[in-house]
Length: 604
Image 1 (tube, rainbow, N blue to C red):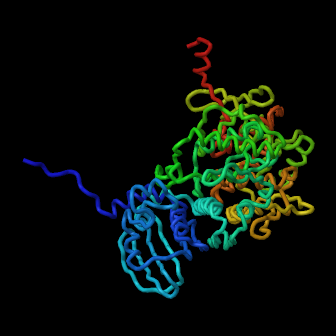
Image 2 (cartoon, one colour):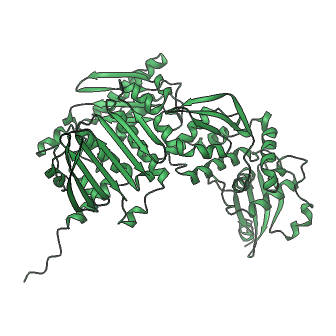
Image 3 (tube, rainbow, N blue to C red):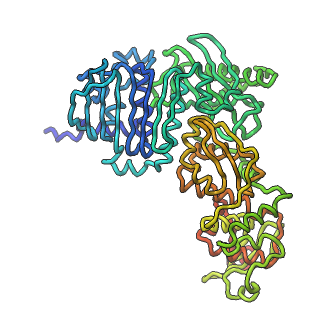
């Protein structure tokens, strides 16, 4: 007797939603698939529009070859494609796409429209909702295709809740456009969004011109390099050793014109630049690797973001030596090939950078110069104190810190100052409900936390110092689009900045306590944090900037506090909403209970 089968074939809409889980991560992944389809259709011009970071609307229009009416239906069938016909074709792929999964996957999780024509004056429009085709109607248009999606994941709340804010998704969309636009400098791009308005990227004469359009005029300093001849060739642009960044966000890698994030190629680059850049500094690189299609497998990742080389042992030293010679030529020296490591040490784009000195470097960047410390603090005190009960009074010796002596109130307070160690740590007694505790408090981190929470209560703009002349900074069109939503908030914190054309900004003034900071370095740090997700929307941006201002104004280590100053700082700390950590996440307090102390002396 045969039992009932428990294995079943899933309905198409369920299978498409499963596939969408791999292909459709966020609006930026949808944009990547739609643009790649347009490029495969030999489009020479693209028009891209989005609203609310692509969560509400994302549209890609092209002037490619277009589709017939019957193809509109087939395009929403799984594994229907015009790019391959047999298994052998997988060994020689030259198109961006080939699986036939993207459009049905996207249509299954959105309100979807596909409007296409093979010649001017013809055309049909297909409309579907979350995988169900509603209608196909005649609708003339110019030759090409327009794909419009709305309300991504609207019927999948579990997926939609993983989408980030509109500002974050906006940033991811621009990062995707940057990579794809670098891959095809001969294509015109028109981008419109509700965050950064309209931007046109005209057809570039060459790759270097497109790099400058997207990444800023500073990139005109990049040095070209090339090794080999087609079909085996590695070429691109590298920044000279005196032009570096604090992160890896300026590394763009391509294999046969396809943007990739490949660990082996990254490792080869690290080997190539070793010795030319100091630790913690990273170059800008736009690298194109060309090789026969059969020498690389692009069918190893759901979104084709990773590749597998047939002979990785040849690719690694090739890239490493070619770039190393380029950096050597830029610096005027040619390191020996014998200095190259014999085997690749794989590195990951997404792995956290292990930089032991990062915290110290971060603090150093925001240190107040000793000869301007009191002036800067006084500037901040004058700005904020009228509204914040004088939070800076205890920074300067001799200032009155309370209306009545602390000694009159400490008996009733839960925390009491005991002393100090090394001019950096406050020793205090905390009387909890259960048992007394000995506290060791990092005075800089404590003061950071106090100022950070008070900064959110300010009601007046900080005093600013005009820059004479104003500083014009070229940041590139892509970075300009990411920064644009934050310009008003920058002005609100005293960084008076405005757009200067499509790819530059003008910094007209800085807060008094930031006048010793190079404006260009300040903007670069801000853009780097945006790339890393450090300030993805206005709320995070505001918190991030306030954290930096608090760090800059806080008392430093080896700055001795008197009894009244230390007691006031402790009282302010315990009244904070989050007294355990500073705004950057470092601990403020180390605790030891009386029981733990007695145990350490063998009394228990």
